Amino acid sequence: MIRFFNVTKEYARSGVALKDVSFRVAKGEFVFLTGPSGSGKSTLLKLIYLAELPTEGEVQVSGLNSRELRKGDIAKLRRKLGIVFQDFRLLEDRTAEANIAFALEVTGARRATIQPKVARLLAQVGLGSKGTSYPRELSGGEQQRVAIARALANDPFVLIADEPTGNLDERATRGVYQLLRDINGSGTAVVMATHNLELIRRAEYRTIELDRGRVVYDSADASMARREAR
Amino acid sequence: MTLALREMLIAFRRTPLLSTLSVTTIAFSLFAFGLFGLVALNIRTAIAEVEERVEIRAFVAESAPVEAVFAAMSDIEAFPEVARAVYVTPEEALAKAREELGEFEDVFEAGVLPGSIEVRLKPGSSDPTIVKAVAERIRSYEFIDDVRFGEEWVEKLYRVRTVASITGLALGAAFGAVAIIIIGATIRMAVLARGREIAIMRLVGATDGFIRLPFLLEGLAKGILGGLAALLLTWIARSIVDRYFIQTVFFDASLAVLGVCAGALIGLVGSAVSVGRHLRRV
Image (cartoon, rainbow over all chains, first blue to last red; front, side, top):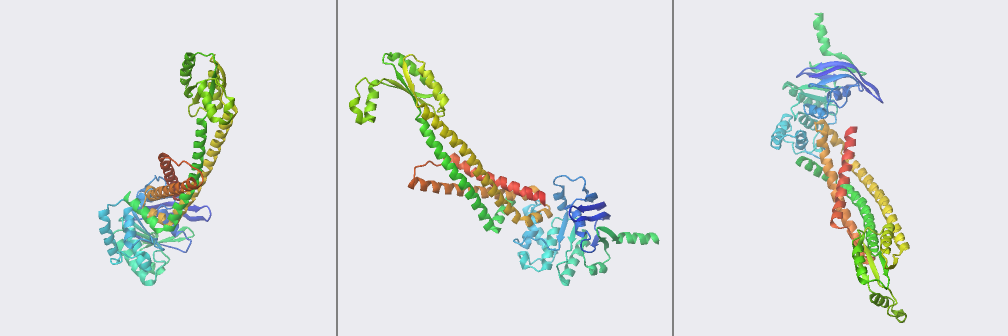
């Protein structure tokens, strides 16, 4: 579903961000991406949703190859992905409903299908009564839930979350995290970059750790090594 | 399309100040261009009026048979450059001279002025070389004593027209370029102000075409509004000049529509360029 083959990403000004990174994410998997600031987590996520292209190596996402992209491929891919950020990235002058509907409208969804789907998504993220609120009227946790609902609008196969709890207090963090677990429970893969070691420790999900652009730990490899040692 | 229209209206509503500024800038840029156009149009009309007065006068010998003169006149009227040819008898010439120069009435005696053929040229035939060529052809008739057409005056008029045309073209191009640059910069500001929105649209899978459409509609709408405002301002300015200074002509309907269309086109192209550059960069 997501495959990285010896991916290196180098920026003209800041130098190497990722070096020789290879891994794969299977359907329905939950993967934590961790590591210190500047270790390359956000760059790796950007390569998944093709906001960046590898300098060397190859990225494959949902059958799309970073080496063989055609015009319009990236837009089509993004409709199959859900993306969530630390700063929510909501349109401030539109209500929660309108923000979610926007993601459906840009894909050309039929008008009659949009409203019921938006209501269902709002209910799914626990904001059934806040549809007409503007982002500024919502708490950080609620705004992130709207962003998650928007990310789910097009039934993505994977949800990419870049520090989704980074701006939230502990209670809101727990709520958003539980929501992501529920989403994963219903079959959507989740790749979540986080600094929050507490979350990682408590869960039994796969963890990939980056340091200075390299994968220094992948719990999937570690468990495989343990199995082989036995 | 409905969605793009709605997005356009949302953009207008969200940034009313910037939108008004864009329309005002377009309006004033086109107004300056329109004023210049109006001056150019009036100069051209004035020159055309003077050009219409260019005439060749061929004096007919006293002994010339009337039939030959009339035959020659039909020949001359058939010249492609000639609008009409009129025979002025010696009596008519005298009456006209008396009327125009009343104080010298005593000087004129019957028969003192020769008959002549007055030749008016078609519009666009006031080029000195054309006038001279027609004059020479007329001179070739045996019974023509002399041909006059104010050679020096025709040459001066032609020079004035050429200078006015070249200056008009250069100034028009300069005004046009300034208008396009200012309008382009204004639209660029509007695109930059919505950079965050464009980024979000891309994240949720909007195609470049989808993102571009509301901006193009916005540019088009601003261009049309600016063009109409410029037309109104130009009309007001012309009315003031017409009322208090000199009589002037205004653009005809097709030129007015052309002006508004130019505004629309500048808005459209400016938006396409600005949003295209922005999309390539992000």
